Structures are given as C-alpha cells and as structure tokens.
Amino acid sequence: MKFTHLCLATAILSSSSCINGEESFCNADCKPPFIQPKIMIGGKLTTEFDADESVTMVDVQGCCSETLPEDGKDDSSLMFTSPVIGKLPQMSKEQTLAVLKDAEAAWDGGSGAWPQMPFRERLDAIERLIKDLETNQREKMVQVLMWEIGKNRKDAESEFDRTMAFGRQVMQVVRGFNLNEESEVSSGYDDEFGGSWKSVGSTMAFVRRAAVGIVLCLGPMNYPLNETYATLIPALLMGNVVLMKVPTVGGLVHLLTMEAFQKALPTGAMNFVSGRGRDTMPVLMETGKVDALAFIGGSGAADSLIKQHPYPHRLKIFLQLEAKNMGIFLPDLFQKGSDKVEELSKAVDQSVLGALSFNGQRCTSLKLFFIPKGFGDEFAKLMAERIDNMHTGLPWQTWGQDEGTFSHFTPLPNKKRTDLMRRLIDDAVSKGAKIVNKKGGEIIGGVESTLMVPAVLYPVTPDMDIYYEEQFGPVVPITEYEILDTVLSYGQNGQYGQQVSIFLSEEETKSAAMLLDRFSTVFGKININSQCARSPDTLPFSGRRSSAMGVMSVKYALREFSI
Image 1 (cartoon, helix red, strand yellow):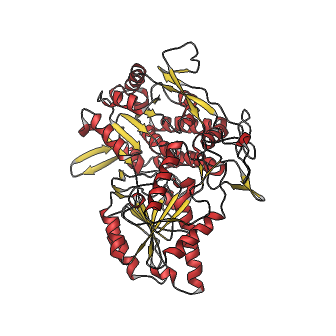
Image 2 (image 1 turned 90 degrees about the vertical axis):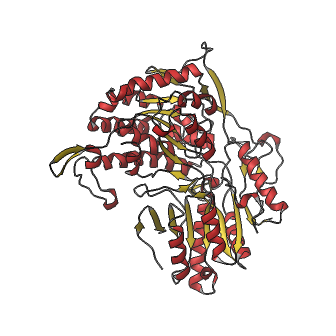
Image 3 (image 1 turned 30 degrees about the vertical axis):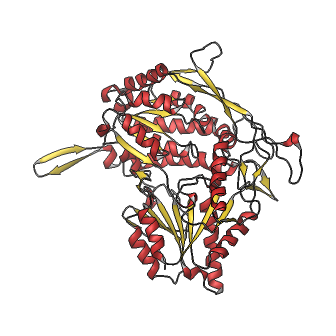
C-alpha cells in the first residue's frame, strides 16, 4: 500500500563550504569561540560595555569541552570542562521599551519606510541580508551552534544552509514561482501578495495582502536560527516590523547577525531584545503595542504571553509548541519472510532517525513507540543494536575513515536537560522498565558533563511519567499494544496533535486505511514508513490541540503574517 498524495492540510509522506577567514575550521580539533555582547538601540550597534554599568551581562557557558577522557581511563585532566563562549546582554525595562520605541517609529502606523517600501526593494534588502550572512558569518555561526547547543558540524551546517534556502524560497513565492512544480519561470509577483484587480459584478477591486504591524518573534533553543527565521523572514517580507527575543539558550548565534540586519534594513525594521524572558516579555506585551506573536516553545509560556496583552483579541497569533509524536508499527511488519525483514529494517532505521536526530531535541521527534503485543522485545533490541553502533562524542569529532561521519549523539545544552532525562529514566526503571542498550543513560566525561548516551526503555507502561510527558531528549520509550483501539485512544485523547508515523508493509491495507481516516482529524501530518519532520518547506506544516496554531510553509508563513 503506497501513499504519495497530500490531502487537505494533512501531509502523508513516504520516505524515499564557505569558511570565513577570521575563524579556524572546527573539525578534529576545535577551540571555543568567544562572542562579544551587542545591543542595537536607535539604529546604533553597541559592542563596548566596559564602562557602561547600565548594561548587565551574563556569561554564556558552552555545553561542550575541548577534550574527553578515553574509555576506561580515569584522567582528571581530561574531565569535561565547559568554557565561557560569550556574553549576553540582559536588558532593563527601560532598554526594552527603547527597542519597542524604535519598532513603533519604524512602523509609524503603517506609514514607515519599511512597510511602505515596494516589494521589489524589500526583496532586494532580504537578499542582501542573506548574502552578507553567507559570506561573512557562516562558519562563525556553525561554530556557535556546535559549542552552545551541541549540534554536530553536519547538522549545524545544514541548519544554516537550510535557513538561507528557506529565505530564498519565500522570496521565490512572492515573485510568483511555483515551487512544488519546480518552475523556472516567474509569473511576476504572486497575485496574493503583489496584488491584483478583481471584478465582481459592477465592483472593481484591487486586492492584496498587507502587513499586520509589530511582530514579536520568539524562537527556540534547538533550532535557534532555522525556526526563528521561518517566521522572521516572511514577517519582514510582508512589511512588518519585527522584535526578536534572543533566546537565553542558543542566543549567541543571533548576536552575529545584528550588523547584517543593520546594513540591509532601515532603522527599526529589525530589533533585538535580550535578557530573561520573564523580565522583558511582559514589558512588551503589557503595552498593547505588539500586533502579532510568533512563538515557538512551550504551551505554558505561550498562554502566559497572550494573557499579558491587554487586547488579546487584537493579537494575531502563530504558535509551534510541544508534541508527543507516536511511532506505530503494524503487526504485518513482524511476519516472517525476507521481504518483511528488509521492510522492518528500513522502518527501524527511520525510527532511530526520528527518535534521536539532534539527541531527540526536536518537536517533530518520535517520542513513544507502539509495538504489537509480543514483538516489543524484538523491536527494542533492534533499536538498541542500531544505537550501540552509533557514536557519542563532541560535535566536531569524526569517526572511522569517513571524515563526514560526525558524532551522532552530542552534549545536551545544560544540566537541566540531563537531569530531566535521568528523572524520566529512573521513574520508568523503578516501575519495571529496563534500559535495553549498552550504557544507556550514562553520562560521559564526569559530573559536569551533559554528554548522555541515549537510553532505550522497554516495557513502558501508562503509569510511567514518560508515557505521557514529552522528553525532548535522548530517551526512547517503547510500549506494546494488543488492539489498535489502544493506539487510537492515545492519539485521540492526548494533549497534543502534531504528527504520527505509521510503519507497515506494502501488503497492509485495512488497518492502515482505518488509522489514516481516524487520525486525519487528530494530527497535522501523517507519515507512512517515514520519520516525522517539518520538511519539505513547500508543504504546509501545522498541528492540532496544544501542538500548534497556524500553518507553516514558504507560502503559508507569508499569509500568517499578513492580512
């Protein structure tokens, strides 16, 4: 049974260097960077703060160490030590309001230079921005992604490159290209965004989408560049003025972009606020001057932000939140036969990628596997075998003869994350689960390290915290089901509704069709024999319940930040 079509808002998918001279190439040996603090107020970029006591700074600790002890060696000189890799300004209430004042002046009731600028000129400005970042900042930003959040070199490079590609795809949509058909010919500006005349009876109207106003944009720590720019670039292109909250974790990469924004855009069109969210965000929201909220993070924080706005009915909201995505294996995959062995092997490969890409720190990760009764132990061992043959290490470490094989599992951003993983693992083990893989859940590098070996947990039962709680980390829980009603009930009655992955053989029809029908009104995306993912960016990406509000794609994002 093969599915290849997109139906409504539910995507059903089947799986099928530029180096800046100022920075050394982080590969086998990587020295920690140091990112100087910056603030931008009134169009002025400030980098010198020694004599300015009005600006508070916090040290940003890297999550990596220059060295790791070799297996079996107790060498205190090689223990995990996290260096300071930069400083992040902590803005006061007055400074935060000064940044808001810049945004207000740039918006000017919709009459500012940026919202009134012709589409062509806004497109040119964003193109200059992207070229500047590619030419002058790529390697620096890749190094910061490795050192601050532990993303391996390949993934860090991919995040940067995909972000720049996303920006260009959005611009192509505005210019009228049909990306899903890979058209090489532009039809001129897209009618929806560039505007067009329409005739209805005796009425002639010129219809086009327009900016909303001041957009407050908050991105996550796991994809601080890609997820943030997926809302920021479309918002800017539509003529909105943007206030970006620099994340506390993963924020240094944004300091490296300030100069490029300053050069490419008019004063106040792009603004940065840094500091603790609970100190700066209420200050902005309570003014009532924020017109739109683009938030990627936790639902609790989103609810709090929205409630702080004095006119929440006026606030245009886009949210991408938590998920507890299911990986469902149908019984036919475990039937005997050489064809089934190959299909099961491919499904396990997708499961490892889905559960543990970037240490499982993705909203789209597979976070609970449902395996038919009697086959949970077999599946758990297959997952454990794959993981045991993968590499845990530093982001720039390469393994074997292939210099392109970097560490699969890398340090988590901070001790809070490893503490949460240990709590979930210990709770499950205390209630009967076993850690199936070798060294699962162990910390490499001493007490200060956050480098954790992933843990495969089986059997997981409903009384365990990890059965319902989103782990957002390198823990793989596996549970068994006797009847599909158990799987349906979990999906339909859960708090979240982002995605689900269903794994089956080509002969399976009845159960898969039933699950597709039932889950089409539960999840934003159903994947067949494929891990959950946001990509491709040309297709709509959303979720239901507490997983999302709004739709993301290179075209839908333009709609989200316009009227």
